[in-house]
Image 1 (spheres, helix red, strand yellow):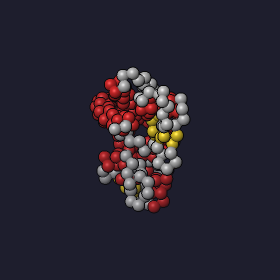
Image 2: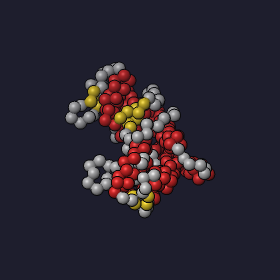
Image 3: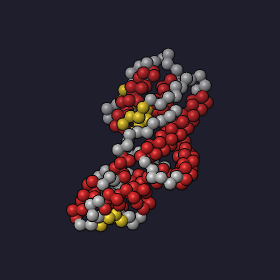
Image 4: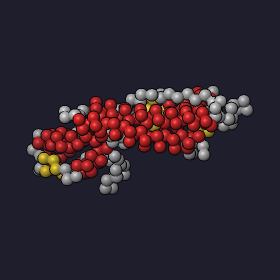
Length: 239
């Protein structure tokens, strides 16, 4: 198994454990508060969840490198989020700097070409640099699903309080047949109808009761919690 695949497996398992730990810790604090949640609360929760995940991945990667290559020097640091479509080029630049030689992306498959390896370069240099760059550069997409308890409660409040109030201003009302399905629709990208791209929206899960012009104004002018979450900046990772 390549170092890239090993890191992926380690990071995935760490992420699952970390999400469970973060979620259980945050449920109590969410249940205890009575005031409405704001987007700042969602951003703080996202940062906490992703920081726990990153630290777990970094610890497991460090342990793996230490056991596999005791003589290796792994640099563990978070640098920045990188848009998914720009990740290969960013990783190539990171590896080029770490190895002191050019690493390129092949045109057809988006694969990093790390050879030929200089005869004086230790065998562990490239895989360890790849692990370090994988921790340093995190792929970001607005469709990254967090879904922590604070975020779910914020969406629920928007569905039951914020959107109904907005709709009333246009002479309409909101009916939510299945609140949890609507919350999921706002947080997790799902395919709806014949849409080519996944949607992150509450509108497929609610009914707007009112005349056609009011319905159009509600959909156009009342903030969709799914779109609001989609537009959030990447959260801070605290190493």
